[in-house]
Image (cartoon, rainbow, N blue to C red):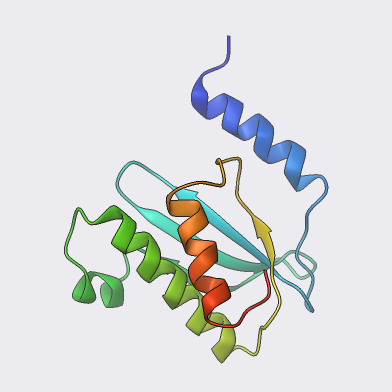
Length: 119
């Protein structure tokens, strides 16, 4: 019997066989731990991270109080969209990293779409 983490990694591998980021349409990936949320925009062709936001960033910590998980996910979505737009990225492929498209993961993508990026 696989643990929850192992099951998520199996789902992640199955999806990553089909999804990859290109220079024209990079991959937006989300990672959740019990305490933190991370979002990255990745160009897999050149193996480069184009934009990165985490709840551990100094800029993020200055604007948020700890323990506000849904608000944190919302802010992460807004910040990653702003950083992607600053790099001239207006289209993304979304990689939910094996997580259900629900709650924090869905909220991040919703905020990115609100900023005008096609996901």
